[in-house]
Length: 325
Image 1 (cartoon, rainbow, N blue to C red):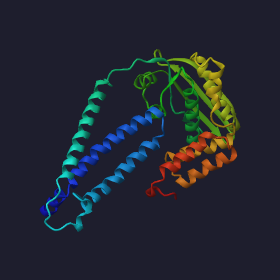
Image 2: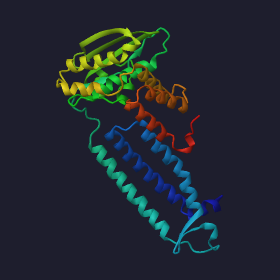
Image 3: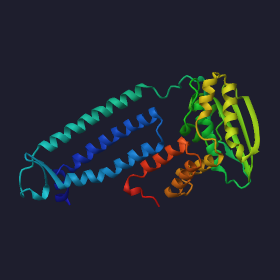
Image 4: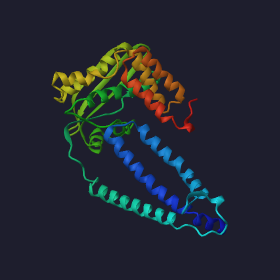
């Protein structure tokens, strides 16, 4: 066993492992920053992490199987037994590791200087849209409630003078007993929107209420009744009334931009919502999820969000370890 460990050390396997871990951590931090800055889907960061994990054993195999010699990279099995190892590879790995650790220390120091423990000032025109509860008799429309919540969130996020908390921040409070003012303080917003969906067959009832966190006051609340065909109209009406209640997006052009994305086809929209639910683990296979998105764009060829979802799905499954089933 000791001879094997000595051989691992001789072939720089331990150095490669250390350098790879440091470099992988830095890559993940950069990917996280980019994903937040450009609002890339969660699948982007997940894909980066998976690739890094898969690359780790490959890097160790290469470190074991190949050697850096004055004549270039050669297979270790081709080198004469007992030949003195070229020290350049070890020195290079040491320098890379030290450089990576230096960058990591600077990064962590800079992050600490941001004082994340201090409560950021709350912007008055800011809101968190909490996941709507599914009060349907059979409890089988959670996917619809989530989709409606996201569409309202996305519509509000298109206004230039309203700060909207991300889906990740809002959806972590699904089913939480935390009081709304405390949730708003933790997220750093001035207002919270919550609501519920009750659907039975084709009949639909959506209840929504806007709450000002500072004094736990209801600024606006309403109930919308209709059929499933009214679902897109309802989410647009909710977004418009919230924008008016917060005195934002008063410019007609801004209101038009807020409500212009998506699709006018209810059937395509519901297929899109079912695909999103499949992406988040409702036991749908990737092939079934892709089929839902494909049906959506077949119904509405201008449905940009569905095309983007198809592209993201293929990007996430380009790695052969994630084959469609």
